[in-house]
Amino acid sequence: MAAGQVDLAILATAVRQAGGEPAQVAHVLELFHQRLIADGQPSPQTLYVYRTTSAAARSDKQVSTSPARTRLLLAFLSADAAVSFAQRAGLARVPRLLPISLARMLAVLLQQPAMSAVHIAYDDTPAADGLPVGWHIARADVLAMFSIDSGVV
Image (tube, rainbow, N blue to C red; front, side, top):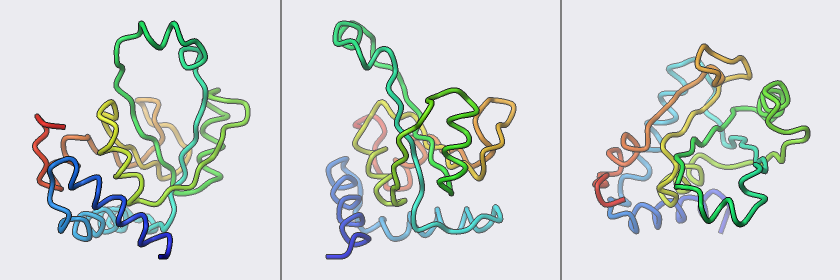
């Protein structure tokens, strides 16, 4: 099975487990692609995210006593933009860059309730809120696209 098909199967499974309609997967992915094209951006096969280690993640005691925090999944259209933003923002000296498909990114969002939103960065230029210029979409909006009751997930 090709990687793209595996990612689609992973997303369909995540949608089903969250109580949504897996038949919506192709439609939702097309909506994402059309939105990016409407914004003058390429419709990527691969997005790029980076992983950094925070001080809280290094200490088991801090992790166990910290309240659950909401998180943002920040994805870039290019690897260069991801690395440039991470270095300029001081998030990590050498960020660990991970390629991820749009389908896999959406599956991660569905499977991790602490993820409050996805932000697809168009480049590494920060906007007024500190995030790079791009498309910000709330978790609740993604759940609605898949007909998932946000009160359940």
